[in-house]
Length: 103
Image 1 (cartoon, rainbow, N blue to C red):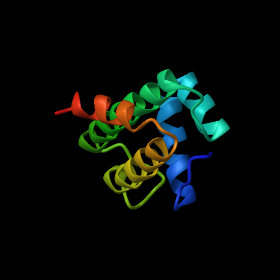
Image 2: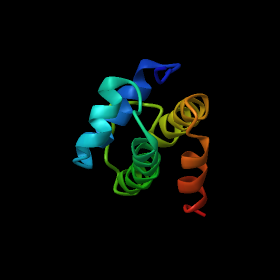
Image 3: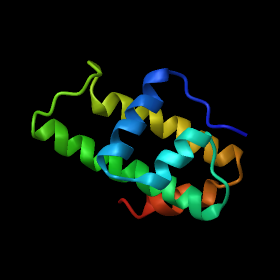
Image 4: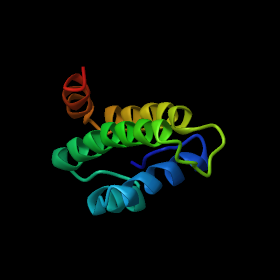
């Protein structure tokens, strides 16, 4: 089962931040299109929240992104893609555990 993106910009945005954060495991997951186990599901979930933090930092520092809609827009789209995928793949608990830590 693969991660389904509604827009091609979602994976471009995710890869942009995976590269910016030097996150080789996330790049590997994104390139494969799926997580293999619970540890990778947790990692992808943590990456998502790190990506959100970094995109907020970039916005505050007026870093221009190649997507005119902005980081908040693409982060929201990715939240639905990642969480939906992880739920379908049986890793809903991992997503919720990591997400709950963000409050």
